[in-house]
Image 1 (cartoon, rainbow, N blue to C red):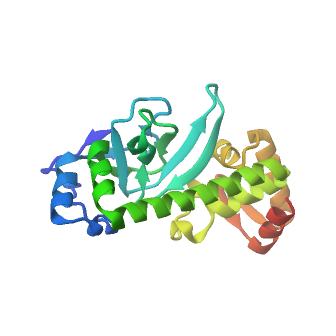
Image 2 (spheres, rainbow, N blue to C red; image 1 turned 90 degrees about the vertical axis):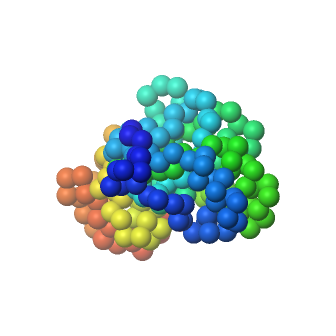
Length: 231
């Protein structure tokens, strides 16, 4: 982790993201005064589950893996966070700790914004608050779908769901799967690494995917969707 100062070439001079365009000049000044720009290298933790949360993070560029830990050596990956999204917003609404961990999948730049400043903006700016609530609802819908899949699908359905998500247009053409090891793919599917490796080989044999070392290419997305539906 490195704090970026105004003399650094990577410094971003202002809060230019679309969501901040909804703020008044006074609110922009408040956010600007309460933010710190930070650079995280690939593999570094942005947040750690259970630690004190005094900041909300806003991703300026890069990809971040969000996951929950079980206290041992097992994790469950929730989602990939992209440019233009917040991390740790639950800290604004009464939580004093981060309820999940987040790790940089690529080199990532973020704004650390004091949570009190974000809380004040949400309280006084209805449009900004609406944007935050809308995004929260979208994430909850996705999470409920994931929970439903975990409850009612078999392992091949779990893996199909994970591959469909990681290769979706949601990431703007970014080859997200190539950033992940087999263990991380398994943690998105909620199954063991050993089962993931076996199922990937089965999918390749069936002509659904192509494996090339770490790279996983989707060859037959329709069949992958069908496996997901059948569970």
